[in-house]
Length: 171
Image 1 (cartoon, helix red, strand yellow):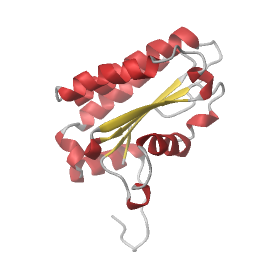
Image 2 (cartoon, one colour; image 1 turned 90 degrees about the horizontal axis):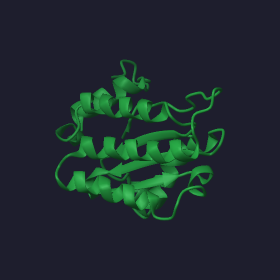
Image 3 (cartoon, helix red, strand yellow; image 1 turned 60 degrees about the vertical axis):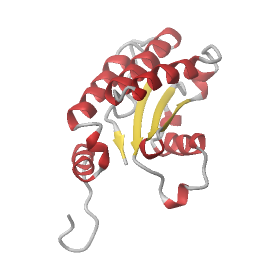
């Protein structure tokens, strides 16, 4: 909390922890769950030159009310800088909990290489977990499956670096 009335910058871990304490998201995902998801991202990315991010939003902000889910996901994709990866092979799993919706957004470098319907199949698999109330498992499954797709089309190279954070973005 600001002591002088100004904004306080929190690192990502502190921000996630604070949001989980005050956010209804904590009823479905704990800090341990978020850490497990980040670990799944690291493991998936260890086999590919691609990048995976997970961004979880509880609800839309007022300014977003007229936007489609795909528009929200693409906005988040750019906000997270995912289009700046070396080979344009970033994939975002964007979840909007209040509306029980999610979207998988893939950059052009990977999207043009995968078979039509790939992202839809992964989304359907994730949905089965979500319908059973297994949100952590559904997200981790999605991360693993995206990692498999990425590793098949853009395997890890000797000079590969982790271009984006693995932490789950929570808003």
